[in-house]
Length: 420
Ligand code: HEM
Image 1 (cartoon, rainbow, N blue to C red):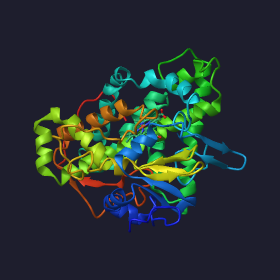
Image 2 (image 1 turned 90 degrees about the vertical axis):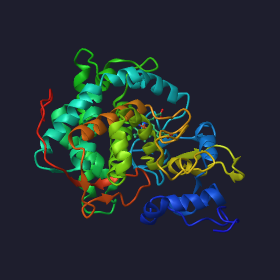
Image 3 (image 1 turned 30 degrees about the vertical axis):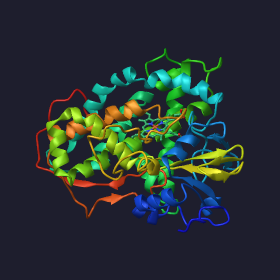
Image 4 (image 1 turned 45 degrees about the horizontal axis):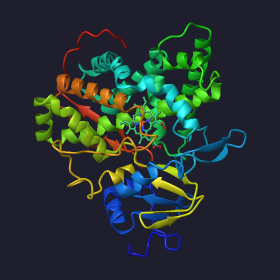
């Protein structure tokens, strides 16, 4: 790449969805950040790629210029905007694909349900789910870390939060994970989409059912009973909220925890240190969030021509905010590619920045802690079968693992208040 690259006249060869990018992303971003921190690529109709910490923060904190709004027409399955490139032909997520003042309405409506105190109310549930899931496999000495553990725990906590029946956990957990990595052209894709459609159909059914009952302490019941901006929610708003909470919260936390356990498997000193000093776990967790950045990047729409990091971007352009690249910017993080539990300051962007900053961060942090604690207590020695393990082939949305078979010395089941 020479200095003149990265403009519309001289675009870079870059595609955040390509398998090559999934293989080489830290190197690719290092070069882009150094030479053209806001660079143009012609892929997917053309978009700017922001890789430096400062450029990403500047855009994330200016929602008037860098809008998240999405339009979608279900009749034609067409639309524009939103936070994904290429455009995803499904209704928008709420609040994430809205701008102020509409954003304020929906974010205020759900904020309290995601506050740290509310999240603590789910800790015992997360612990029970993790305990019960390990009880299913612990006597066998093997499991698929992703499909048997790090996938189901966040799925079950999210079901409880939403007010969906926990007996359906398998039907809920599997499609959410499979959808993220199954290529759209694969023969099984239609089946995966049907599984995800089923989840939203169940949300619609439960929402309608809760309308006829007194209010219960779960989100679908709350949506059925409480007004937003003076009116009760329409079903399409409920599905947009459910879409953002479910798709935003499940596979992301799975990816974070799987990356962490994979890292600890081949860094035995770091693992021994964490096991001996549990007070370090929150610091380790923030490092894993920074280094692995489960949500790789998200898009915005440019509403007025403006200059960012020395680059002119035009009204109507699309721009990609790369959290994963900003999180390894050496201008902000010393030795950025290293996991360092003793890092003095860690202002990572794994949960985003600005008004859309992740509302579920306390849930993610709590679920991570509970899963790691269960693993350390009950399966302290695991080995990964790398022959069978597979990373996502495309990491354009979520950077995670499809599957990760592990083996361990079998152990006993333990008593648990929750039966699967
Ligand atoms: C490790 C796990 C997670 C990661 C890395 C993550 C990452 C992010 C990021 C980067 C954003 C910013 C979006 C933007 O700027 O366009 C975001 C927003 C959001 N996240 Fe998370 N998230 C995680 C877990 C969760 C969980 C557990 C939930 C729900 C239970 C959740 C729900 C949401 C919602 C609703 C938004 C939209 C907030 C808004 O627009 O105001 N996330 N998340």
